Image (tube, rainbow over all chains, first blue to last red):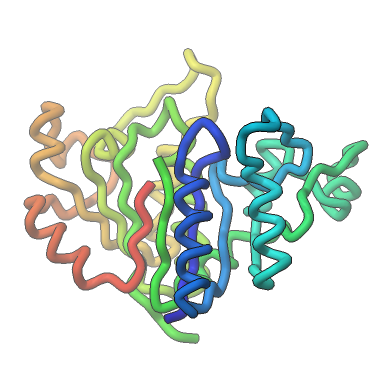
Length: 130
Length: 120
């Protein structure tokens, strides 16, 4: 089955991102096709490489990056939500005159059209939120 | 392009969290992609449609007018849960746009017919 996932909450405060990660990993293990994972609302905070959790805790951001690399996942951070919350790649930094970038490897910033497209192209769009 | 039935379920008050505002942004993109878009309002989500948002005191941009503009994007299927309205002392006359007030069971039936359900 072709599945897309929407993550609406940031890491650590809510379990939504953890649940989404475990779901994606399990779906891949079962041979399903993950078309896209889209990060919206505070979910965009899953895409900052500056996260530094205590060493004995999971690193939610690095975990997504690693899975993206291993399984060629398309991790998309919503541009409008990212701008509000300070998630920046090189293109955004240039466009908005910012002096730094923080987008984690394996993520890309794009528009909400990517979410609608994921809904159209997938058999299921699974939402993880509060 | 394939057309699918997208329903946006709005459960939260318009201010206090950003869900209502950012939900509207997705609704407009869904309409721009010429999808079959509908909106359901339930629980505190019914407050999103209440006439006369005044956000001066909280210094947050109000967006009541966006609901009125949905029609321009051909988004005209707005369903409101009757129980949620009643529980909050509201009727359809208190709302800023024309809606269809329905029972919870009827909205549930509509949800079953959707291809994509997005709950905010």
